[in-house]
Amino acid sequence: AENLASRISQAVQPDRDYHFMEFCGGHTHAIFRYGVQDLMPPNVHFVHGPGCPVCVLPVRRLDDAIELAEEYGVILCTYGDMMRVPGTGRRSLIKAKADGADIRMVYSTLDALKIARENPDRQVVFFAIGFETTTPPTAVAIKMAQAEGLTNFTVFCNHVLTPAAIEHVLDAPDGPAQIDGFLGPSHVSAVIGSHPYEAAAQKYRKPVVIAGFEPLDVMQSVLMLIGQVNAGRAEVENQYTRVVTRFGNRKAQALVAEVFTLRDRFEWRGLGSVPHSALQIRDNFADFDAERR
Figure 1 (cartoon, rainbow, N blue to C red):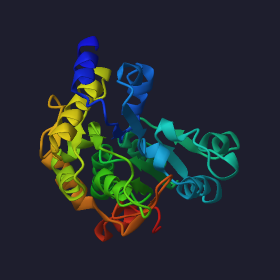
Figure 2: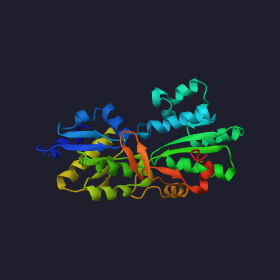
Figure 3: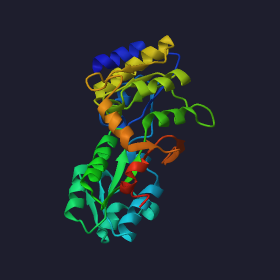
């Protein structure tokens, strides 16, 4: 860490400021937990980005999930990080559960399918959230439910896409945000690869470095961004080479494309309505779409 901090201090130009946005909440967590900002020169600043899928889910969608459990009497399955997120009137899934709604925390989509098999007389809804990282498991669950003929299983789909959000930030109506480059998502890029960010880097002349989640990953990625900014380059570089490739996991991408299609628009908490930034279930899997049902 000391070596990287020294190299960053030597690399920065003293007469300019650098503003780098980390997209993922995991990066923000690493920056604060390990004091990465304190190791930076005073003219290197982190601009905290959209965060995690839980952070960007709008209140209305959470309210819809609570309504499904309370008014329709379904068994609502959700990942644990959604349980305490406040909706309208600070109502949350955990409060609805305490009031008698059948809301169950699961560790995977397979858990939700198991609950549907064990409760054939109940409707089971999986509350699907996440960036591209958690979308393939949702696609697997939908395909398995169709193959098994599970008529009591549906998905409330809230999967969102990162490249569209990056472009939306740079397309702000009051002019581009003060951002010199991006720390690109880690786990997301393991699925989609680094290639999808190349168009934004070229169009907006902003470098992107796919960064791992360890504090040394973040620091090395900052050094790579500074090098690009100083050289006047705007490319996509991959610091997280131990996990991410340029074209990602093609099998997972094909599975997602088979089950999902783009929404025209989707609301992000903090960003507003973002075009082509989320997925919905395709017509041939409509029987497993909780919104349609």
